[in-house]
Length: 139
Image (tube, rainbow, N blue to C red; front, side, top):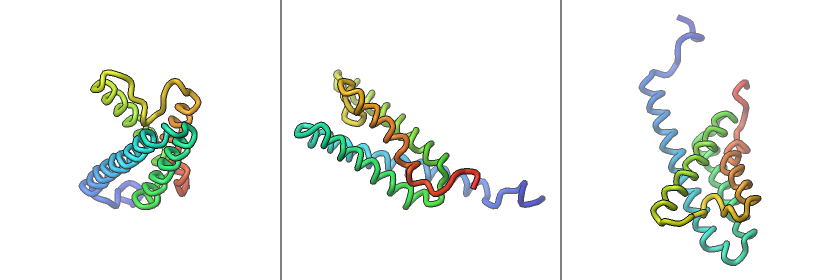
């Protein structure tokens, strides 16, 4: 067999890598979610735009840390997948918390009353990791 048809890493190692990567994606999302929710609850009372700036900044810092410390050689495809997973976990978290509280809870995505900010948060959750990707899949 040639190196083009045979993987260099055994299957057990690739499974371990996938599980580790998934756990780190969830861990960094949890860190980002706590930072965003805390900033939303503390700063949005004083200034909506100031709170949004701090929340976006927190997301960008966490995305930078994930891409530099965990996925150093990740492609843009990997970073976009991480961003999509982060957004899905954010939506699920808001739905679960809202169903438990029996009223709307919008700390992670922003209030539907401010659709522009909400759309910005949707894009930031998805695209923040891809800003720090080093190369594309074809490189």
